[in-house]
Image (cartoon, rainbow, N blue to C red; front, side):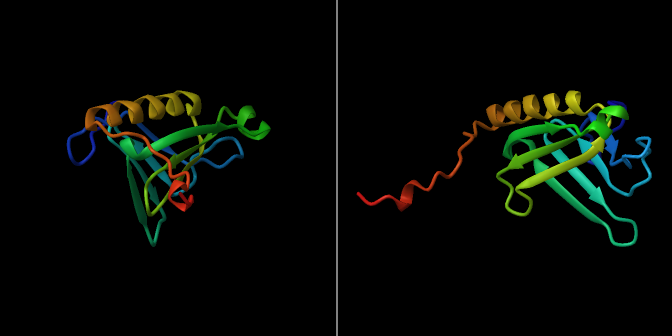
Length: 130
């Protein structure tokens, strides 16, 4: 779990793989890396995509578990963010899902406090006529 380091020497808190629901085996090419400041999703084998989202941009986190995920000790996390390229980040079929969800929630709040960033959501107030 917290024994690796990312390229910028920041401590990796969690490193997980997307798993097949059948027996919870990690036979996919999607990797999730979570540090105190960044959530990274690496996908693909021949064509790879790396998607990063700063923790301070994550606004809310949701954990879901299907009956199949519960049987194999897995869960899926959806992070709702203010990120332009990927507003919904999904960590699918991962182990330690509840622990990771709680960590992301706490780390995102800490990152906002460090940056003194306010978590705002557009409620369409500029559309109102005065």
